[in-house]
Length: 610
Ligand SMILES: *[C@@H]1O[C@H](CO)[C@@H](O)[C@H](O)[C@H]1NC(C)=O
Ligand SMILES: *[C@@H]1O[C@H](CO)[C@@H](O)[C@H](O)[C@H]1NC(C)=O
Ligand SMILES: *[C@@H]1O[C@H](CO)[C@@H](O)[C@H](O)[C@H]1NC(C)=O
Ligand SMILES: *[C@@H]1O[C@H](CO)[C@@H](O)[C@H](O)[C@H]1NC(C)=O
Image (tube, rainbow, N blue to C red; front, top):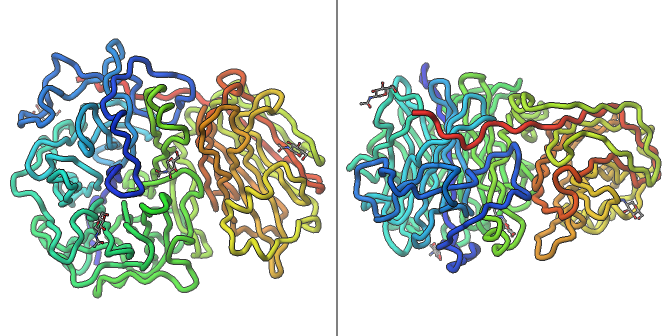
């Protein structure tokens, strides 16, 4: 049953928790108290969301809530570019959006200076179009017994005929003991929802004795089914990843269900679970409470042990409150991914104003911590993506939100351009370091596809990409884009296809290989890759890449696969960066059509005028 006027809800923040809490999170105590004097512009993104270059402790500013502030002297900052940077290192930027009364709200986790590990606040920005962002003061920060040691990730739900409610994980002691809290806007008539109140009847959920209270976080958006509101909380039981389910009739009193919604042995802690319906036909998104015949469900989790995410498609039994992944899908580390690159702590939300489901992911840095300290910033939000079910029902499709196209400026086109083995042709877009490029390649036949070595079946796609790369000559491929390239190709980040012939079918590999991306040292340079399930009968493959100084976010085969890389060129920077198409395979490739646009900068981090 669907409540008729659920406004939907939006998701929010998977913010991140922690760092440091789990063994796999590295902690760098010497950098936690940090006074950044200079924010380096090199490698900062032009149109991907980042917190302001200057975060300051306004010495005269008033804390936004009149509650006792455990940061004592640390008042909540306002953004003022004329002041020195005070809190620039936000390792943990991850975000979550919600749509309410004409505005998208982005809440993101932020690690302020000087506090011990875990003093995470919810920073807050608003937008009318998901692209231009104005900033507000933080929405939620530690101030009560139930979140004194940190306000970690969570989600928002917009109640029918009501306002939004945020659920978030509160940290109550030095051992990172976790409970789930709620917060509500102080003034529902304020479209900016500037001020949030954390009522005294918190928490809404305490872990019972069967739950590991230091691995219990990231509540989801609520959905309505069988007379109850329901949410998930991510957890683990020894090595088993678990999504606990809690139910409520009134949104206040929450009770743990007999069984978790789902759990998988051997996957480790599940962070940032996300559970939502997708329509079996068409691209429209659905409110989280929509059930029924024409709907499938998606369960996505972020794996703390591997630091990547996977999802399954399946069936939600709303009476038993169980989720069953479809047969044939891998329910574990080797499962389908929303992005095969640097992408974590993602969240979706339903946007009722456009009937879309929108996915946001966070990308951390691939440089060393010392370099983050030197540049004064870390972490970006990727471009929001529309997501919907592929007509095959076997995977999701994704595409950058259409609003991004407003930023497109100067345009360069190519068509019917032949690329023989060894060719690379420059695409002379005016700002190749800040560009959007969309290209369709074609080829006369599949005959020259290289054989697929059966040994590779056991390898991760990343290892296959590492073996072959863009340099080993091939048959059908490697062909694609050379992004963030220096003029003479000392540096470049290739995004390319290689097509293989396996026993039963062709296998298409998309790589985004950081190994040649920089002459600099100390960088993490993975050859990110995934196999994409695509029909090759029309002998075409398409690729779109969003290039933005230190990030290359790519969508292959019309959004059937996405891969994000973070890279740090030394010479291919600003106006010296170049963009090429290339082919290193023996089969001739044709650039059927290519459009590349210089991208303008959106409004970002400009304070909302009061
Ligand atoms: C609530 O917000 C509205 C709209 O911004 C404003 O006019 C009103 O003064 C606010 N009320 C309070 C109590 O702040
Ligand atoms: C509980 O969670 C913490 C943090 O992830 C972990 O260190 C600990 O081993 C877990 N305990 C059990 C019994 O799984
Ligand atoms: C962040 O970056 C490091 C490399 O610097 C990487 O090993 C780690 O897995 C990344 N991802 C996340 C989600 O932390
Ligand atoms: C293409 O292959 C040649 C020969 O292996 C290599 O030198 C060149 O770097 C390759 N091009 C790219 C873009 O990898």
